Image 1 (cartoon, protein in one colour):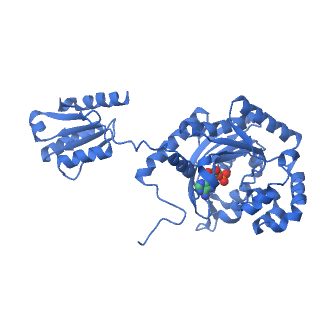
Image 2 (cartoon, rainbow, N blue to C red):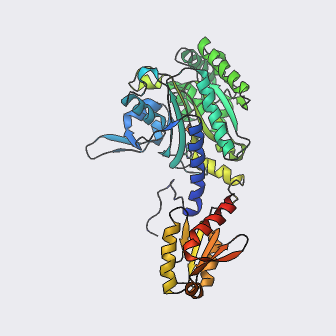
Image 3 (cartoon, protein in one colour):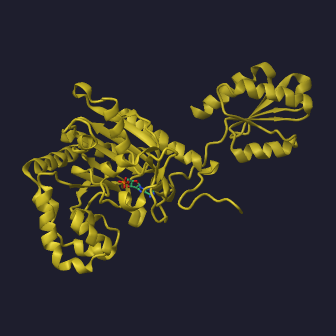
Length: 423
Ligand code: AMP
């Protein structure tokens, strides 16, 4: 075969796309319930936005961006994550005017040049939320609450939040020094990437995917004992709010996020079904980013989650076992005259319902077989005999009960059957 989907990308075929729609709908409904309005931002932005926003020392910026020049020589990058673009839009449209709190959600593809493996792709989908304009720890708790609620809504039990703090520019310089001092004698045991991270930003070492590095880091000092008063108090308040809301969480002192912009609270929601790639979503506070990207100093907090991985877990947990929803109605006809009448019926029914029909002039038996395979809930049959009597057979595919119905009354009869089935 000549063409294939590029490495790390894949097609989401019709037999799977309904699962994606179910997740997207659950996400949008949960976001509406929490008061996050939708924002749609471009899929590519100026390269510099990501380099500054995500941080030069991160793996994303150093190794994973899809960067290209357009025909005028501008450097553009396919978005590797959603926050930088949303913050750019927030600043560009002065959304924070009058000290407003801006709450937005997004859903769409992201691009990272990573080594493809189970649950890791080069084009993958993320859902995300951003709340820009408040330092209140209740916002952090709300976003963690959202992350758990979304998974609950999809029927996924056992998701658990892990939280930590990333500190702030007041407390992290001292912590970086402490880390460097503690890790200096062990530096030879780290991978070459970690040795670069050690020089540039030692906290990034926690983000390494290498087991040997992680084992050495297990005994490194925790950031939680180096937090300044403000960060420590913020962390205590987040914990108290989560406890008050009866949300399950654990403290994970070695958690670091792969993006430099985080300050104070950072968190991930994990599911045991995911193994090594167990994070379903992750986020935290980013109080410096808006100013870093050229806006007024504005505190913010957000989260993003991987849809590809979420779907893998939902499949594994059997939460898609009920099959793809079928059409409401299948219209089967026999003979040219009935086919023309059937076409008119299809058009009338399609106003309110999903309707399938055969376009291949096949036998009634083949059409009924197809109606069953598609799991249509009601079948409308017009054969020569029905045509002569001015009726159609309306059949309930579940109970197998059927009636002759005058042609004009078919839509109402179908409606009654479907309402009963939905009832
Ligand atoms: P991040 O933006 O790195 O914080 O990632 C947020 C979430 O996106 C992760 O928890 C994953 O579920 C998902 N994710 C990140 N990278 C990938 C990838 N290459 N393929 C699939 N999902 C990903």
